[in-house]
Amino acid sequence: MDSIRVKGNGTLKGEIPIAGAKNACLTLMPATLLSEEPLTLTNAPRLSDIATMTQLLQSLGAEVSGLQDGQVIAMSSHGPINAVADYDIVRKMRASNLVLGPLLAREGHAVVSLPGGCAIGARPMDLHIHGLEALGAKIDLRDGYLHANAGKGLKGAGIELRMASVGATENIVMAATLAKGTTVLKNAAREPEIVDLVRCLRAMGAEIEGEGTETITIQGVDRLHGATHRVVADRIELGTYMLAPAIAGGEVELIGGRRDLVGSFSDKLEEAGIEVAETERGLRVARMNGQVRSVNVKTAVYPGFPTDLQAQMMALMCTADGVAELEETIFENRFMHAPELMRMGADIEVHGGMARVRGVKKLKGAPVMATDLRASVSLILAGLAAEGETVVSRVYHLDRGYEHVVAKLRGVGAQIERIKS
Ligand code: UD1
Image 1 (cartoon, rainbow, N blue to C red):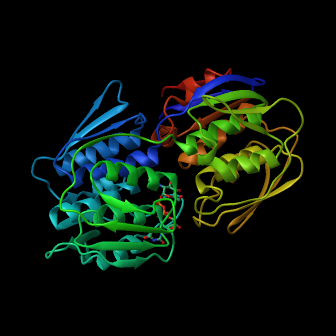
Image 2: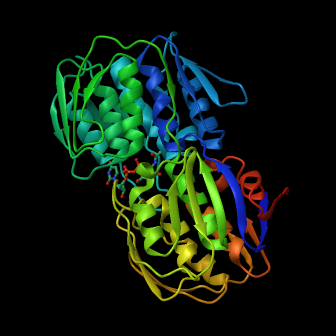
Image 3: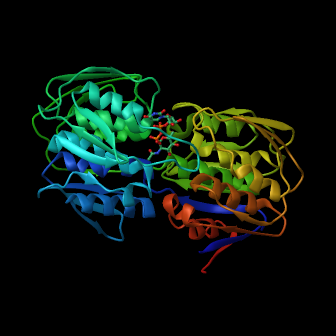
């Protein structure tokens, strides 16, 4: 297994291009199943999760090809569809469950493996099931698979989610585009990836209103057609690289970054004493001198502070002035980076969903282990400012969500390399 070696090497300067959003792409790709005509995505990120979704769609009978260095994904589902999503692929990536809604809408039936637990918590699918059942599907769990059937076709309905789940909102919206009549989805997730999905579905001929608000209304249509869609910028990659100059010092421009994608996160950085400014090409983030101030953070659904930036923010708080309280409200087990950061000299106490981080003067390089995608990048960020050498193992987690992480950080002066096993 490869690892990444990073050495604290002073301040950073330069620019980092921000890729298309992984999480948007993972819901846009299954949307190809809703039409027999081609769907083309531009600005797609080059990541192993995208390769996994490609493999899944191909196993269902869709044609998927990457063009021009993989940044364009061309898909077509004109042939017969095999509506079975196998455990061997689904277990690799929870987002595989996003084929359930489109398969049901297209084929009237689907068999999709339950993803199982993941490192950050149990992550059930009850909300997806509740929504699709309200649209008229019957769903049973047998042999670890969800067996869904909508013999008489899907019918629009009023649905209210118990929690504003991103994945459930995506599955329900996709299924409802081809249902008969109107669906009104309340307490829908408002994340930018949902807005991006709706923009793409609308380009395919869907009739949808209210994306980005708590209520999304979908008027079912008979068929969707092909489209070409540019994937929105990755706000989590953006936030992660905004933290690089915040932690190491210096000044970096994030090309393609948009403040509206990371509003509450940017507010917290500014509260901590980091400069964030909009530029013509993106966002400029700087910490020229002065110590970072400790700030309290509570994760929440969008537009709140994203859970996917909590681990990286903790890395910043490790050397901040004072005590920071980080509260995780979305996932029950998302502090696995804390013990690894403590191996680097951080002073952290975890009690349930709350972590208390007392800033220390300096972190010290150490061998550490990545436990999930965002945890792994938080260890790299910590390594940028640590004394000596940090070696992060199990970097396959990182390959799921960060393209060219080594090249991007080297481009702004970081001393970082990938060690092939
Ligand atoms: C998506 C993102 C993930 C991010 C998360 C929260 C993708 C591919 N992944 O994951 O990176 O961390 O949003 O912003 O877009 N829940 C239920 N029942 C359900 C569904 C969810 O109880 O049926 C719970 C989950 O266990 C979790 C919370 O709801 O505690 C939020 O999950 P959800 O918004 O569904 O996250 P994902 O769509 O899986």
